[in-house]
Amino acid sequence: MARIKVRMFATVREAAGASEVELEASSMEELLESLGQRFGRKMSEMLSRASGGENRLVVLVNGRNAQLAGGRHLRLNEGDDVALFPPVSGG
Image (cartoon, rainbow, N blue to C red; front, side, top):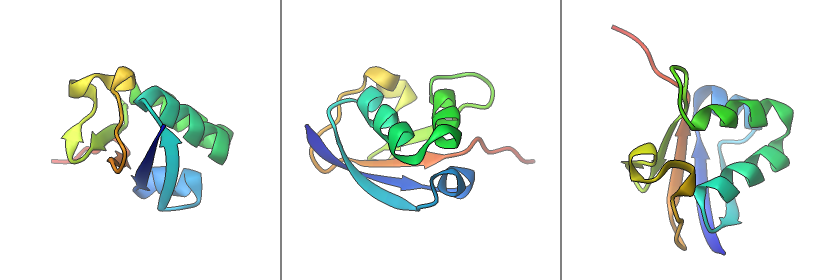
């Protein structure tokens, strides 16, 4: 298992009640499950949108879009930095 730093922004931060946490996980799937267990139902519901759909979360690993790099199956490494953002819209 790798030690991962997770930073959360806007409504994701509000659901967690924290802006940053460190967890151990070897994949994005494990990381999202750990976050849901740690922060409860509201966070779990928000994280369920990490897989896709119109209102999906933006998940970056070391500044790169996790969805394009393997999504929930992405392998994580020691010291990776994961950032979670709510969907953004505007004009």
